[in-house]
Length: 251
Image (cartoon, rainbow, N blue to C red; front, side):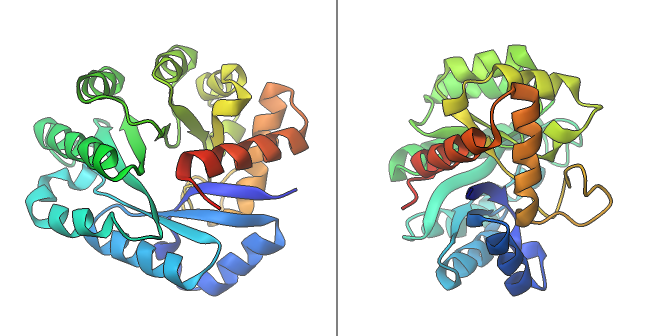
């Protein structure tokens, strides 16, 4: 079985060669390295240029939306790079509110516009802001290939997102016994609209809780997903790989 980690932050590793090597050994041969500001977006592009199995996204995380004026020109210019397959992660995060709501909205709208203009996938981060996220998406128009990264909603939010034609990406949270709503959402999402991710180095899945997360562990996310869905693991691996290739137009 082969896997695609649809969302990771390889910039956070000082041993990236070893991390990618372990991923390949585990059957994870495609990784999407996600930018969260101008610098990490540049780093993502650099890593994607250096490693055949790595592709990049460029974006400004809602935590840093107040830096839009300074950060956006560099992000916008990187979006046309041939190793860039997505715009984001971008959206709303009302849990921490590191940037004001109006700044988050302005930044999210800019990402949606850029996704439309470039034909890149849109990668959404939303936390405790479902109504705001759907409102802006509906106002701006949902890009043809849009993914809710690290989906943290329940079945109701999943239904709303799926009705817009988006894909849902599940992280290690789907393996947590204390996340019944996320697990219920994973169970009802059509297999052709599911992705798996690590969000490495964060959100380490069971059975590796307490360790640093890395792309090799996306296999455990797949196991958790197959358990809550009742699907064969090979079917989950094949579907999530096909979906990631479609969403991000990977070769």
